[in-house]
Image (cartoon, rainbow, N blue to C red; front, side, top):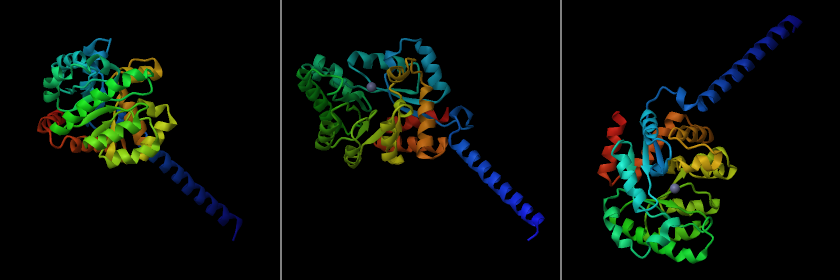
Length: 300
Ligand SMILES: [Zn+2]
């Protein structure tokens, strides 16, 4: 083979290699494209937001929700917080208020739970409820947490409603109770043992992936473990993002979660957004009110 022929072959191989590298960059780039650059106008879902706790102008928050088309499940800490969320929701179709009593507030309400039955009855989902044996170190408060959580689980079972739950440091007890009451859960910002995930999945639970995905290998591992058809996205705004970054979690922070999760799961941003909507629709399949709200929002 002549020297000339060899160099042509070499040049040809080099071109192929360059093409492969170019294609890989192109594909990778598409996978990690920031949401703002996608042409789609798909509805995103934020499965866990404390809309009533913003201390910035709520108009700015609602504008951003509408601009980014974010169906926002507004969980409550207690009755007062639920009433405030309902008022906010009157100004924005994208906000769906749900009633619950957070484990941090349980001891204030455990003796008068039936007073709030009308809130439970009207709420399309239940939340935020759950247990916290990590941030709450005072064990004398645990019986009230359990009493409130079980009260809501019993109601959720009777009314066939999905619950939006907090599990911090109490992951084993929470799954035991979900199994006992046979209630379907949105497991919010799970950060517990990987070994328990399958047990939650067997109980029909869906896991939200939160803003911590960008900061924690453990959360990345959880995102990897849970299959796409059981995943939802959330921010826990406004507190979740500010806990991590000292910046107020505005609604569009959700886009950071979606972008990163799409990268982790190696799917396009659009297909992830669509899958999350499918997942949410499956969860609320028995709720015509929520489904028709989602249909309406999709048309905006
Ligand atoms: Zn929360």
